[in-house]
Length: 303
Image 1 (spheres, one colour):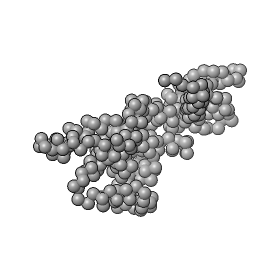
Image 2 (cartoon, one colour):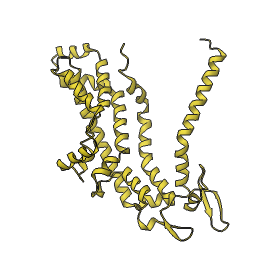
Image 3 (cartoon, helix red, strand yellow):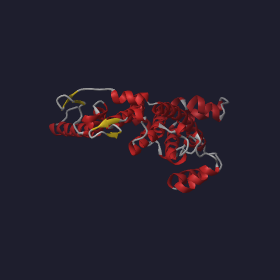
Image 4 (cartoon, helix red, strand yellow):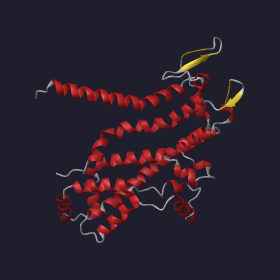
């Protein structure tokens, strides 16, 4: 295949635009990483620009250098470690439960003989566009006795209608002949699901698992509303929010003295805490990235 110079030039322009957009996306993270590895004085005096800087008190100058003091303070804070472990366990539980609920909701809707199928689809899709609101949800959680209960982070959001539609569309793309041949051999619907549908659904299930895991890991609004007096169940993102808003989440022993002898929570520590909570979910993403595009677009076009 012969490509014209105009086509090659266009490809180069697209590549440069993509590289530029990627750089714009990662620059804030790089600057945050540099702040977490810099001294507090360098961060407070705005001397950190994408490279870690240390303050030399003898010469009152700033030079390139790395320090792990902020990370040491964060790792030694027991509340942060507890929130991290709890968030990891919570993410695993919510992801598995949500995948199970999504499968159990999407699979029956693929059967044409299911009575009330259209009505069920209408009701399910209606809930995706309309909800009662924050105050009615709070009253409901209070009535159910879920306030300050760890189950309030698991049960209300265990099913996403959008993700269910993605999985249902994928199930529709599986040839009916596979299911019919299994049924002729005596397989019941549960056997068909386990033996045929799930083994063929690896990419889409991996994608939905990523959606659920990232959503739960980054979620803090429900914990902020429903866990006002249960600090032992606070997830890591709410812990970060408390740190940034109140600057009191880190132990008093980790508060540093800055210019003017005014006690202030270190900005470098806040950057380290954010990196501490962000890196784990970033490590998981590359393992599922190869399924991401295929899993999202699968079932969108049938043919």
